[in-house]
Image 1 (tube, helix red, strand yellow):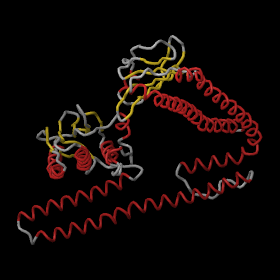
Image 2 (cartoon, one colour):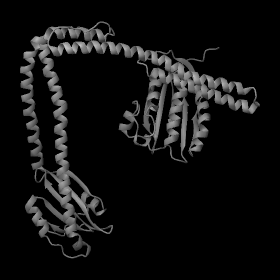
Image 3 (tube, rainbow, N blue to C red):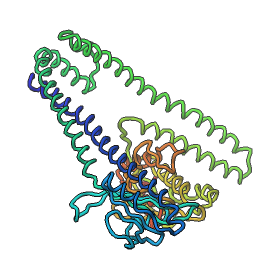
Image 4 (cartoon, one colour):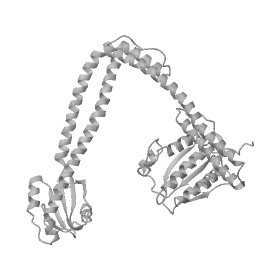
Length: 457
């Protein structure tokens, strides 16, 4: 027990050191490199202002500032005119063509550029910074500085060695202190371990797990006892909340549906049909509320039911068409088999299509087409929603199904749409795939388990 406890102290110490020192070292290295690059870029800007008049008026530039900077910093200074020919070079003759160098071409286009490249001739890494020489929006030339990064990298390595030395000292102290404390902690810690295992199994009964040991252990024991009581209370309140919230949210929706049904008797056939559509939408809203509450539970065990994907898809496309037209987008049912029976959790297909079509229409540019299709298979059916909007990069596609994740263009959303879709699809035994649309946009593919013909009745 003592050895395991000591190993735990050392492991915890090691984790804390890694969590603290590795980001610190990375931050320091990045900061030093950024500061070094910023300083060199600032110097390049100063040199650009010095040579601005000469390049603008086509006067022979004075090489002295470049030579002085070379002597002071060891950097190579190259000044080129608007055609890319060097007019000042601290390390070589002038009149050399630099227009094909990417950093020079970028600077002559009016943009700053910097980076690090390997010099096989000098056998070292070089930092390059290129800035335009411009006035009044007109580029007259460019200044490029090239500098060895050996000194800054040496400073970073020294900082890492300092962190490693500090970590060694901390580990040594932790070993000594941990060894001294392990003997006095072993027995009450075993009691705490037993209690923690009991809590993890779901048994939150019992008071404080230990009344022996040092003051810190006793306080921890009391805290664990209080924690168990609070967790037990919170779990009971959460279970009660789920039931109460479900009831409270359904009640106004049910009342709304009853009021709408009462209106049907006083309406003509066309109005009654339209009102029935509203009633159907209120039913879907009630189902959506129930599913959102179910998603909040730790586990979901609902029996899949048979749903005709073709019928539901046609209904949802028809319902969303007016919304799409309001956004200047045409919603098209690209492919629809006569029947495609799938096994899904109740209400899943409606919610999946509503979320996917809503997202596609909102992000699709005006005048574009959003295509919805259903393809039937022997073992599975596929539902696809294709838009031609901005799409998502690979990182966005990887994170899109996480709850509360929002892309830059979805700042006003809740970040739950694709998370709900993914949860419903997985609960139905299917899979969700996000792919790129050619040439731009997002294609969302939902694969669901196929079922036999719909049961009669």
